[in-house]
Image 1 (cartoon, one colour):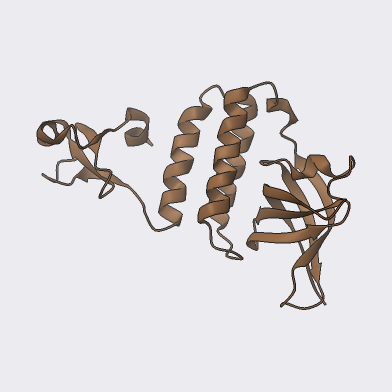
Image 2 (tube, rainbow, N blue to C red):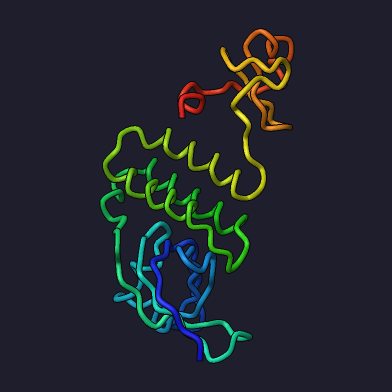
Length: 195
């Protein structure tokens, strides 16, 4: 039998059979992983299945060839404080959906886990969370191999007056050099340059 315990962020859950669920989490030490939750649709465990919930899970399996089971779920950071904020709920739902779709299974990415935890905690008390969310998305791109290069202009090598980013290359362009191509470029927010 194999078993482990870790903090995790709930990404996705779906009902399985009448009372159970399959829960997918992004674990700090084991990456994106799915496991069975007995009684997962019941009133006692339903809150753990909400996307963005930071929980502590105990996982076990009889064989590495079988889907494991989450035998214990405990709340670490509840998201109940943002239930009144539709924009914050949308942000956490988008973040969880992105991780569900793009992260490889069972590959721990601790810096991304830590950044996601900071994002979730900022949604509850930081009015500047939209900027934190955009930085988080840029970090997700980096960890999946599609990072942005916002250090210098791709056309001239200049490090000042960066105003554009290319959606094709992910590289920045200064205001003067990018002006002729502005219809094909995206505006570069100042807070990304300052980060």
